[in-house]
Length: 396
Image (cartoon, rainbow, N blue to C red; front, side, top):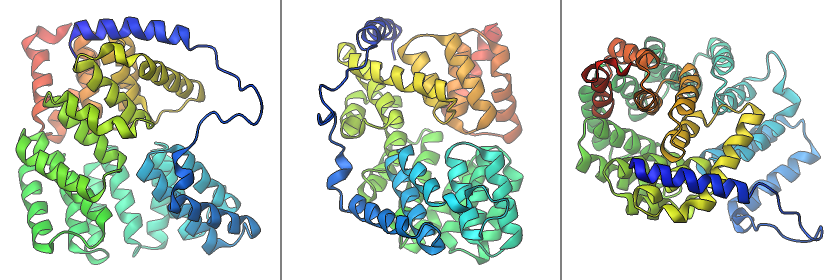
């Protein structure tokens, strides 16, 4: 976002927050404040029916596992933490057990992962894979958490365990995801693309979406914009409401200067905080700063609420908000450093480097620069940011 736009947006935000600080109380208890879109969704009706049946027998393990699994799927699809809360509630009778049933342990690890409680998730996954070494989903989830924590050797070992437990495409995707972050971007992309083409895609649309998104991000890291765009669009045809995919493609469009396209893409999905942030970034970069007032107020309220709860799930987005929309480089940097302590993916590295540059604090960037060198990270955008510290004499 241009500096002038950031300053204007910051001024608008200050005014917006002041105006909307007082909550509006309903006149009567019967007043409808908001009509939630999921009420008319057949999948949601089915979920509510499942939960009602579970309430009749809350210790029915197979039923509880099915309800929890379905809510986790909805939470991933909609990026709505309420669904994860419903899933945890379904597992309530076993949630605090030191050694719950294996199927509960896997779902608990998945929910802990969604809350970025990675050490606890890994403890559950280590116990589960020791108890059931033939559980492919446990190994895949374990590899995912280890990758997020930049433990690439452990993640590679976990992926290797999949070779006899999952199909070739899933195993290859797991290994390629690690390799692409650890000095083998080109080889990983070629391998995954070849296996995906040979398989004719995946039987499961969710797996196909996952692989296509991964391939798009690999192409994006090496600045192959046309290839990345084609793959993102193919994934969106399969999963037009997938929140991770929408956010990743929106970031790609923003980097390409296609701000109006990003805004149009996200307009129907702006209830989710990460997508609302990107919609605001697209509007601001596209010169529509005065249309941002309600979105900025909403984002400020959400991030403030997260701070009060001690919620660290959206620290990456909050740092972007502070840097690009509030123009507060110091606060953005502090949040980005907290985020980096928890997870270490390329978008986490990017916001920390951007905030460190804006705050003229080269020392704060050192952990990311060391990670890039140690892991041999290949990413054109990160390389350009890292080079600025050297070119600008350390920005110190």
